[in-house]
Image 1 (spheres, rainbow, N blue to C red):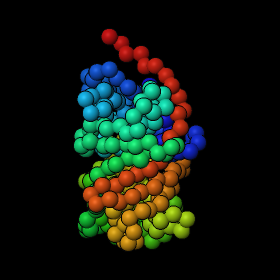
Image 2: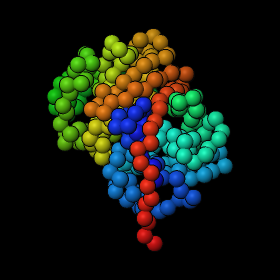
Image 3: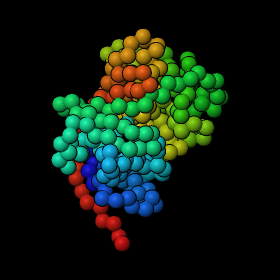
Image 4: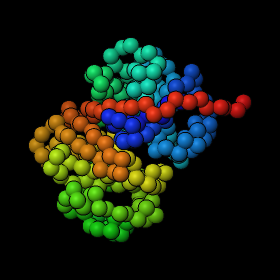
Length: 257
């Protein structure tokens, strides 16, 4: 197992993910138990396939359909530690085939674009956030648009109330000065009170901000405590997310027979 800081240029920033390369699939209950033991936002498991690798992601409490930072971490492990020599990797996932390309020290991930659609503001969301967003959209998660970067940074939501919302999680975002937009992501109902840097959230954020700002190339920063930079490029129904990663730890898991 490898633990990797994804969307990071140095240790102790970005989003940590565990990566477990396997020869074959283990029982799902064991995969979930390993993810719970790791207690990271995501543990990724990969198995060789004809196209490249099958890839699955688990939070401490559930399997998820799409995860950006653990895909970035898995690609980093293959390129840096496991001798993968081709310039691109194809991952077969619950969200279809995801292709990651190596561009020097950076990794480019070709993900599906998930444009959000406007929706009414539930009173429960206002109570959970402690404020009313200036705009609310959804696509798997709520996307709550606030007035300013300062408002995003200062937000202190009620996690218990967030966990009772209908959708998986809440992305909060606002325009910024040094980058095009900032964001934070909360998903306590799937075991992630606040995610440090969330690739899948940028599949929603990038098309929203591309339409609002009138440009397809965007610079973003997730302003969690650890923080991380995500560069986005919208290409039709796809979003290319670019970032780097750093290895924190290499270990072995003892799996009892």
